[in-house]
Length: 527
Image: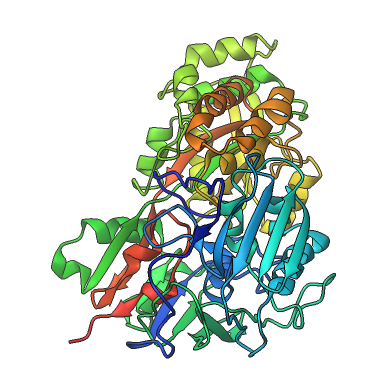
């Protein structure tokens, strides 16, 4: 799920890391309120369910986690915790001590009971659209006293501090949430920087500053209203131009961003494009049990014909860049395995040879399946471009079909599609988050691929290594295996953008490596 950067988040090793810098937020918030717009929907207000960018945007501002990513950084620091760290040298016992005087926005105290309840609840509910998949290393959560939480892990997990610094680590009030049932009233009770005052899925979510927040954030506005445009890009663009919103995030069309970036100062009419770092990726996924796509030669033929450079030029207008491995550029251990094997330009002769090796002659009919909004507005046009590339070779008869998300996910689950799209906005800045969810046990791709070497050896060994730089060789081998066996074909790595009026400041701290869109950093410049 979220967006990452080139700096590796070094996990906390032996000993406890104490909170540093900052203090409590300004209790009232300062500056003018901010109005932002986005076309993503908020799929859930309950952190046991949401696992999408819109929902995590809400979680990161309303709920606290034990740890958090500081602005401009990717090493977790204490948030609700005073200190956290591994008790052992095997990355299997993780202990946190809570800050004094923590309270939820409803006035209830926040203790270790709430922390343990939150993690147990997410795992118990195990919602198919939730983040429980990130917490599978947890065996038990113990609470020796009101301020101490101890996580006993089933297996070594050096990335655990990063996982609980994400939306998956959101702490809820055990008196406000049921252990075995999701909250469905659209409310959210947390201890974060903001309170959710109201939420209407069709229109907006309103947030006010939480005066009882205790943590490192410093609030630079007096509240946030998030206008929800639910996929309507022209409406968001119009609202921005008319001054109805101060900024637009995750929602303007590729064409609009490209035009603004290349416009003159007068043509921009007071609007600015802010570009941030991103490790968002998009892949072609191959169902290896499909009677046609299950043939390795068919997958290799497609890999030899895809022209990523043309895709990002013609469809994405350079708001993305070609991706040649499953671990994106800027993340440690990234290599160019797919470039090394299949090149960066179409190779028809090799594609034909791969097909003939499977006994296939003539044009092979294939369908590329997509969904129109979940993975960005360029998804369907991008797939149409890929189909054109395949057809131009004379080796394929490819078409594109697009269905709404519910039907799409059901089709994947049922094995109805041979080729389909999956996008990924990572949860934490480590190669583990680009590999374990795709190729580990219970992976999210549902493409019937399993490599025993990856599942039984490479993923466990990298998860156990506290020195993340030392994982590069194993992650390199993993990427090479995937390039050779082709359960997925990486397409592009995104860039992150917001468009704002020129009096808006601080957005660079919400478009950084951490994946956290920080409401509290955004302000309006006073005349």
